[in-house]
Length: 210
Image (cartoon, rainbow, N blue to C red):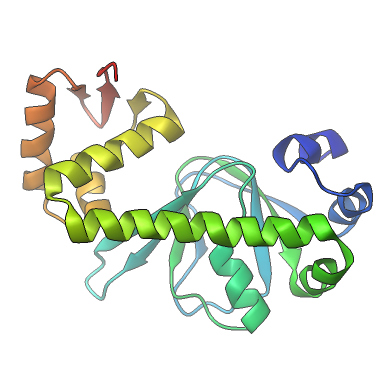
């Protein structure tokens, strides 16, 4: 990890804070499909994403998943921040969707940086606000939208994050939206018929132009 990489992923920090990140943050690499957080896990550090995408989700007793939000480069995990500051255990799961590179920040430095660096204070607040807004969007989709509208919202978010070619199976989409694979298959075939997407084996291509 270099100073230039840090500045690109996390711009606007004080020079001294960049020095501390280089000195104290631990660089970790994980392949796609790795579990980073488990429910009940004690969290003693927070993670900041340099490369790749991390999925945060909840899982019920039967193994069904429900998507909460994704973390992308330049973002930090608000859940790990909250749990670390409060010394609580995680209530969510986190898994890498792609190969990822993350920084982990131990608790003692997070505490001291809040008082020491104004840019870190703003970064933490921005992280909380961004994740809160994503949760509000998720709640809005669940409470006020029917499944075809929720699916469109979900697919558009995937395209925004991964580009027009998204590697997801119908079962993975169904798990994220807490519905059945049959419902997702039916709705996606309808979207394909309307010229929005092209369905391929284990991935889809977004072709709608708006």
